[in-house]
Length: 320
Image 1 (cartoon, rainbow, N blue to C red):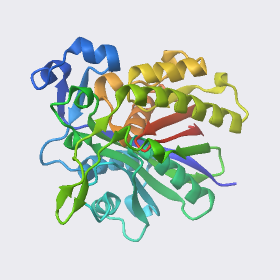
Image 2 (image 1 turned 90 degrees about the horizontal axis):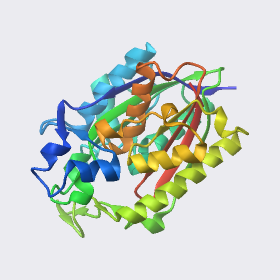
Image 3 (image 1 turned 180 degrees about the vertical axis):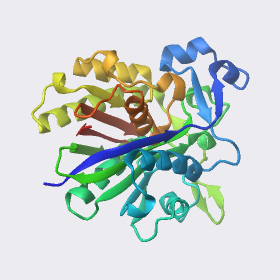
């Protein structure tokens, strides 16, 4: 049986760090208010001349190096993003050109903060079906460009970054199962509603809009259900999980999910204080940090989960 196994991970954060204290100069907020409600203390913001492809390239090259893999060996490239560089071609194609790969299928996935989990699930299916042997999966965002920096309810939450994994076919267990969901009836609860037509933005703004309290309630319930779904599909108990790598949206949501699993926070990879919510990049960023600092070890069971606008949500259970 073919499994899709993680061969290497990588990540990248822009150099500029914006603390809550600096943010207080832009918007009516306070460090205490942000930390109490979100757990966020700082975030990284891309430079004006940085692109989503730039961030993705850095993360991808780190992942390729960790996997001992060249770009030419890749036969699939999938990139999850909400902030592509162009209307088209896809940022995945732009990344493919940067890396020097020719001929492999390359495409973007738009599932907002669930984008990496969606992309990883798709890549897993390609490998399990025998259609690919080595796949690059990336989550990359410059979310700061769709934020209204006068709206303290949204601008304090997000940051920029990228994370990547190289998957390879293996006869050893890797990704055990993936579980994806969406419910578009909640489309106005978390959205950037603008439409581009005739070369300009129409029918709404280009800024993120969020009904924070409602999003929080939905997220806690949806993530609890998708965690249960992953465990039941593999006939595992919560005690079988070595590490939870959650979407880094809000420390309260992370703690609620860990409590559901009866998992101590010492077994949860938490980066939200340093990164904020980097949307599709948050899960691979946290995963890479947990692997590189030695906490996540080969053979351990890891649960990834995320929820994003749409709503979209999903989980991936894997043996690292």
